[in-house]
Length: 231
Length: 231
DNA sequence: CTTTGAGGTTACAGAAAGGTTACAATTTTA
DNA sequence: TAAAATTGTAACCTTTCTGTAACCTCAAAG
Image 1 (cartoon, rainbow over the protein chains, first blue to last red):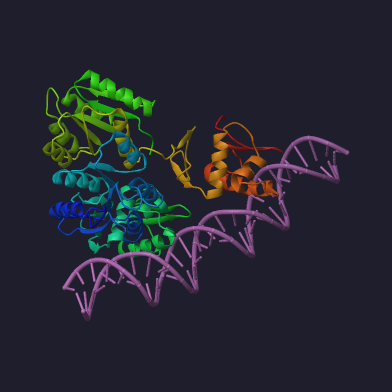
Image 2 (image 1 turned 90 degrees about the vertical axis):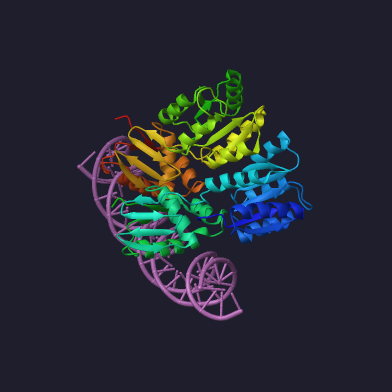
């Protein structure tokens, strides 16, 4: 994915949601913000809407925020930023142990919030602006979602783009279905391989001279795919 | 995907360096810690020693910490955690903008430090994943299901992989048919030896220079197989 | 010497995994 | 809000993997 698109706020205080939304829209005017005050509903939204980043308040009405995080981490690696009034060491440690990516203490500073979200988005490759990758005769500009091969330029869809980025970043190494699934959905999708093979076909049609006799996007049975230019 | 091995602390206060080192060694007993009080020397160390993670104090003697970060980011994406006495918003924002990965405010809590470093290491895949096994001229990556011998890399099937893993783990020792069967099927398969010999043949074709005159995968009649590089 | 048994070797059928295409549902764009 | 693009599933085909069986080779036992 080339940019931060969708963000989920799990927080029951409307004012806080409002404040966060406004802060984020300063930096990402096109961002879509989902929000809910319920942990259960939050988990549903994560599964169905696949946000890029989650902001999670610890004090929810229905379930404890830690519980939400724990359950989310059973199926997903989407970055989670915890929002808390108490800045207590024990909480912070517990949060990190459960797989949180960062902590923000209320009351938070708008600019700090943006800075921390930006840092996470950068880590997870959600932010573009990087140099195009040159690999053999391929010019792959992942922030532009384009590949050029032998003068022929193609535009990729979001999903194709993230798969190809992951594969090119791991040139000559097999990337497992799990890793690819994580890249596409941020979560461990059921029957991921079934969908992935379709996307790989689509990619092959865009970048392979003969899609049915692939030279660059190769499969390793039972494992995953690799990108190579060694032929 | 190894483990957190090498960490660089750029900080001029010896006591702080000491405190951090001790905290880290609790969690990673084998960690190697480099440290320097000079920003210039820090940059040198980063270039030459390639640490996995960098902890950077903002108040250095020679150059400003931000300046160090800026220069590091011109050639490297190694995670940088900033250490600062002032928890001022402006600093935090500037730090993240320059590409910092996290902030820790002095005086810091040991456990929080560990938790934050762990979180970063997890993101960067420094944690988890197994190392490839090096054995003679063989590089066997069990999670990748590949063996490299004299530069030639082969992919193994699931079954071949589990057999070879078992044999290499018991290098120079005969592994009985029973043990191998248990590795493949989890149970004591009927007529296991009949199938195993076929798999061994397939393995030999993949890793032996002359599969019919095996040097590495040897049989002990009536017992089982062994893997050896002593020849 | 023959016999016997264990391992080596090859071929093959069924199972599992990947390739290919079409399509309905959803999301994005205009 | 209608049109276009994208997504994910399902169905079907092709390739790869698995385990068995048949046959071969060699060495130790009778």
